[in-house]
Length: 91
Image (cartoon, rainbow, N blue to C red; front, side, top):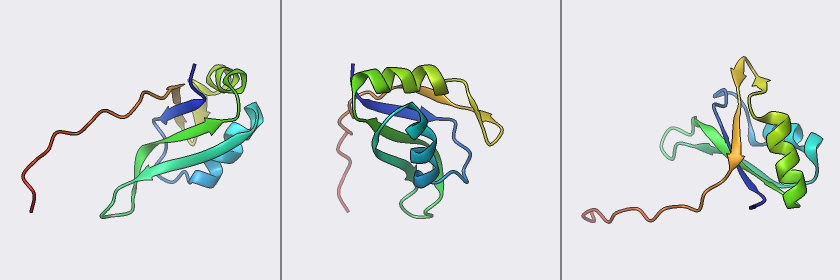
């Protein structure tokens, strides 16, 4: 299992710091980031949390998948590796 977790269905007001503090309840968080739109800077409603061990990552999934945060049930699972994006014409 990977130690990097995908966290979806985030409220748009949740910050990376808040995400990290929440997941610290399950263990040591080595990184937490909420993904934002490049142009507007607005949250895209998902992020990633890196835990320090596989056991802590499993515990975080058990603790937070389906848990309500800011009125929305979180979706927490193991992050998948990024897929290559198709090349489009360069500008």
